Amino acid sequence: MTSTKDAIRAKALELGFADIGFAAAAQEGWGGQLDSWLAEGRHGDMAWMAETAERRARPLALWSEAKSVVVLATSHAPPLTPPPPPDRGTIALYARNKDYHDVVKKRLKALGRWMAAEFGCELKVFVDTAPVMEKPLAALAGLGWQGRHTNLVSRRLGNWFVLSEIFTTLDLPPDPPESDHCGRCDACVRACPTGAIEPGGRLEPRRCISYLTIEHKGEMAAELRSAIGNRVYGCDDCLAVCPWNKFADPAGDLEFRPRAELTAPRLTDLAVLDDAAFRQLFAGSPVKRVGRDRFVANVLIAIGNSGDPALSPVAERLVADPSPPVRAMAAWALRRLGGAG
Image (cartoon, rainbow, N blue to C red; front, side, top):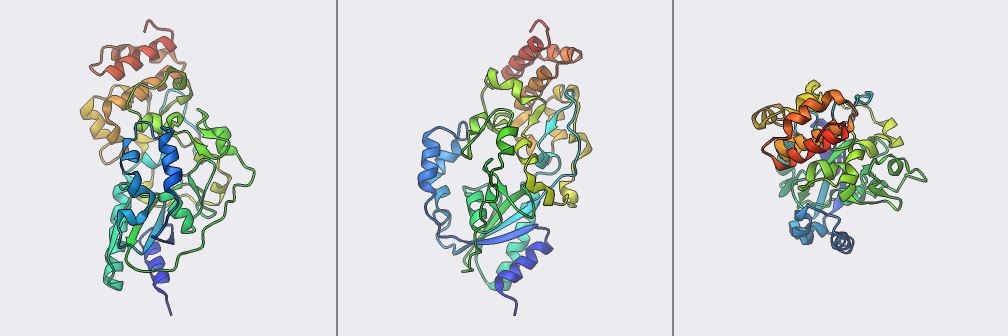
């Protein structure tokens, strides 16, 4: 006889999810660690982390009626491609096509509707837009373990996947948690360009390139800019070197297949985007949320790091841009390339 969990698992896989696990909603013990992290100021400009700390630390504080959490993984494992040359930008793999929040939420709602009709339960769905401690919950649900880079690692999927959750009133037996299989490997620690991953397996987000190019609102510290290289939105370095990726097949999902124009785009093409062109290029993409000014400032840092004086004219043109961050990074890029700046 098929159990409720088996039925939910089969439906989830049918809808395109790569893996699924189950955890109890009644979880405690994250509050102290989260409070310490916040007290150290590691959340930087991510003010919402502090504002939602109480609900983030306890799933039941988010929804008191929940009995179980269904945790789902959606794979976006990429095909292997060589790194682009310095005159082209690098966008994090998950952001090279449609916004995964939109793609995953459609599937999540479809699964939720099916669960409600099949089992008469109540539920709430979340895709990285609510204060949910996704990675600890996923580890408890047996989807993987948190590696030294703090991202979740799966023996089946490597670490090329995104997480989502269904909180439900169904009282489902939890799956056993996955044990840590990193062993002595510290490839992710050594791969981080800015040294954001501390040897003990803690992340300093304020040095992380993903934070610096996406979440950070102010001017990037001068001593970190050269380490950014040509990364204009996010960073995959710690994920890419994980040995467990060798077990992950490239995702066949067309909605996650990288768009050609977002795969190694020319820095000169990105730098000249005005607000309308930026919005058109990144329509439906998570990149859109950083806004044209912050994105072009990132592009100018990449231009400054390119070592190619032929890119100086585009930086020179932007020294008079209306945006203060763009002007500042244009001047920095010019100085790096040997111009007047």
